[in-house]
Length: 393
Ligand SMILES: CC(C)(COP(=O)(O)OP(=O)(O)OC[C@H]1O[C@@H](n2cnc3c(N)ncnc32)[C@H](O)[C@@H]1OP(=O)(O)O)[C@@H](O)C(=O)NCCC(=O)NCCS
Image 1 (spheres, rainbow, N blue to C red):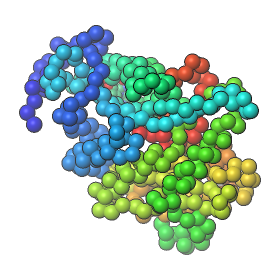
Image 2: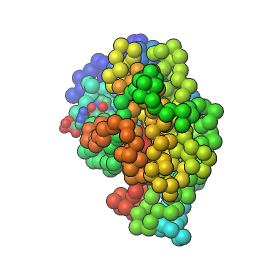
Image 3: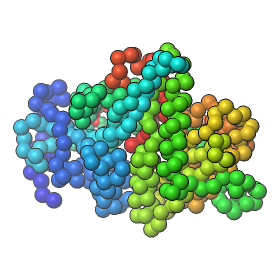
Image 4: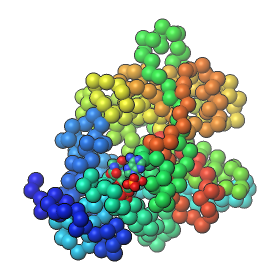
């Protein structure tokens, strides 16, 4: 595609300073968006070739959460220049989600619901890096989101992003780092599970048909959990609803279709009787394709323990069976490991008793869960509940 854009032709020395009032945060045209995707392909396509990556990004504008204006693309550019003839100095996207919080705790707990934003794909063309453009964009975005899509209702409760460049950069723009650990399990093939005598039959796979009901129940349990939490903190969460999971699962389907020519039907697993269930929902991510499993991960999006009061030892067998199905899927779908982000103390206890080999990892550079708070209380009083992979975008 031909281009009359300053970025390709002129010296970057003539560009405005990052503090210039002449810079604006706005939305890309379709051509500008495609140009940005072509640049981000090298960084984020994983196993997808350029055509498939462009198709995936377009597809991801149409799925639950994203459609009907849920997904917004943003660029920092120079005011007054015609669209398609202006440099894209930095870019990102936001995804509208639903959040919930409680204040006060116990019987007097006050519940508030509202919009939450996930932010992703923060990117500066290599030509323009190191000039402060991404920092400027993030500061503008943080302020802009306070009133974006608000209509007559309250501002968003908060926004989240996942930094792959450590804890400092986004903290300077207002997104504070939160807990960013995970537990990793190794893939185990179905044959090895049989040799080891694993009791995977204690759990059943979760497919699309089981998800809606489980997500409804998850939301109900989460609401009950949030109002039980103690005063002194504001307990916040992204609602783990069906659309939130579908965003991940449809993305996974698109990617696996491109790489493997087929899509996985096992989206999680559940063990136990209603009222006593434990389940996990997961998705697969591919840095690489079929050649190597390196960097490919089966991400547990969400773990739910239906009755947290049950003794850990009663939950261990079910949990083990759920995770053994995850391990088998991880092996079958060419991934290097199963990751479970920030398990609760209850789930940590179960993991330690369940007899599966695992590694605990405290991340300090990549996927740092970060939150910008729009409430009045200091960020130190904010407790992010269910800080799990489902909240990522
Ligand atoms: C990260 C990125 C958006 C920064 O854009 P930028 O316009 O150059 O950012 P700014 O000029 O406002 O700030 C630069 C600062 O970003 C930070 N930074 C950039 N890349 C970094 C990295 N890989 N690790 C840690 N910090 C990094 C540094 O603090 C840097 O300051 P320095 O130049 O003094 O070292 C850009 O480097 C990029 O697009 N990288 C590839 C995509 C990516 O990793 N995006 C972030 C995903 S979370």
